[in-house]
Length: 282
Image 1 (cartoon, one colour):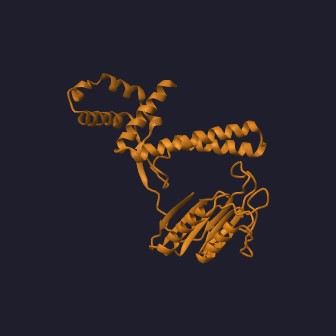
Image 2: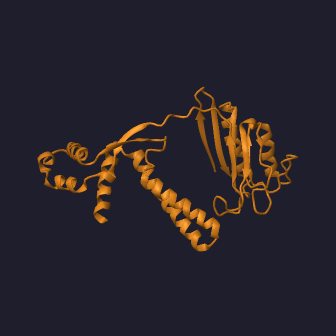
Image 3: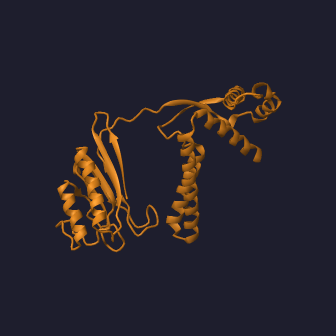
């Protein structure tokens, strides 16, 4: 399994950061597939900055001598040399003392602060997480100021009253669905502008779907993770695992709604209706 992300810098320089997972008992076909993918990335794109990190499961590899008693592993080591890739991890990354997780690059001078974290520091695993930095000159985007509805200060009672009192048939009756939907949204926004104040906020370049609800769930997940790391109890582990599962599910839903809605106002309208439903339930 391989995943690669290409970043194009302001000066046109291309950088690829890639991950790979290799099952240890796979044979020559798997080697050919990975070698072919790496060759396409490095040779055809002529990359000067390539970073590959992953679990290759090289159990007998000696990185100092570039030697392995396993034939398939030796093919990989030779291929890395042919492609000009240097392996940067020198410490064990597994509880049994093997260096199974590796960091390969053709631009060693751009890697900094390489660190092997302790067992279970990131998540429960028999592998140790790898932390590293990249020395790259990038221009950060300035936070954008955007106006959005301040739902906490909404006058829900007045909004609900006007929505209930309005003659909706006067703008919806006997119309095509698209026209009726446009009229409904237009009138709803008239009410919203009256009863829900707007506030100017800085985006901080966060994804548009990462809202306050996501932030609260993320903080809860981090708090439970810290509690589990302190106690190491099964109870705290289950609480953390359940919250992490809920957080991932929420992220998928939020991202899907943001990416696949044809009109941003549809998302806002849905948010307003859901928010109003929560107010009623409370």
